[in-house]
Length: 415
Image 1 (tube, helix red, strand yellow):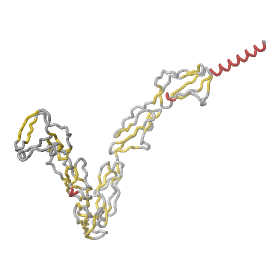
Image 2 (cartoon, rainbow, N blue to C red):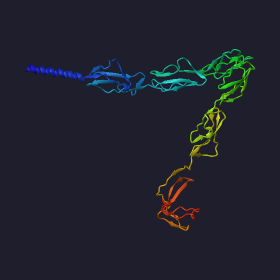
Image 3 (cartoon, rainbow, N blue to C red):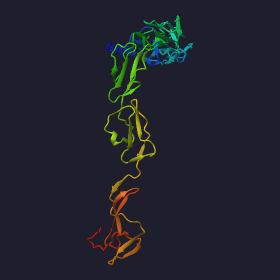
Image 4 (cartoon, rainbow, N blue to C red):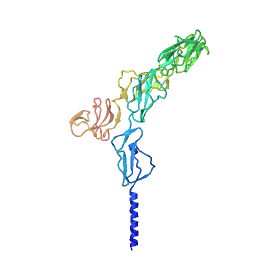
């Protein structure tokens, strides 16, 4: 018996030791939402015995929300104590001002970027200055500088030269002018300007022994010589059908180029659509294209009338676009709606009736009781008509017919 009691006691003691061991462990915690990281090296899922302590610090680029908050936790009875530390992104503050420039700022917190931009006529100096990033220690890179744009001397051209003596360098927006030698004509722009990227634009012109072939879309050469064109040659043009010539149809090759400038062929307008309640008049509705200068007339759609009857109803095609149409329309107040009135419709409470006697005389009587007729139908609205009928032996009488009517029987004209 004593031996059994001793064995039971040993078993109970071992169980207590195991239970105490299980209850006294904590698994590594995670506080990602607080922007913190463990100080020291630990394995994922690692367990620590009761009484263990962990210390946390802010992630790179972050700073404590409260500098006095606790940074350590302790495993107590298989649970961690509360962590007081919580961190937020660091601020790099506003960047310094740029002389003759500015920053495009997306934000000033850790990870945000700013982009330096120079004012017109200035350019960034240095390499890798496209943007700056807010790092743990502040804005990276160096402060940018914006210097005045300068262009090197413009290129020379064959059979031509600059009108003025070239300089070593030119400032932003300065203009240079080219001219051709005698007997040559200039093709391209004679004026170039120093642009914001430090180059002259557009491309330099060319000096040709004659004139370049004109490129005129939708034009047809009907007179003059074919290329190449020498000084003194001329060309005569016309436009394709529905296209309108703008300019002088005949041009001549001179020392300075084509004289006058080559003409243009203006495209026709498409069918106009001004929406609302207007529509093209019938005589124009069959056409799809309208040459430059064509005029078309509009009218109001059925059931509508002009808001102002004095305004013009004409639109004109002007270089692929229509002029503004002044006509606007509104619903007509005399909208015609035909409907049959109910047979129970009554005449006014107080009315005068006429009874035609056998001799053709008319006997009038006033009554405020039962009606002697009804509205059978009509066209209602301003200017409309009504269809009337009488009950029983009564019939409708007008001034022109009252002495020509007879008393109807129940089979004639009764309702």
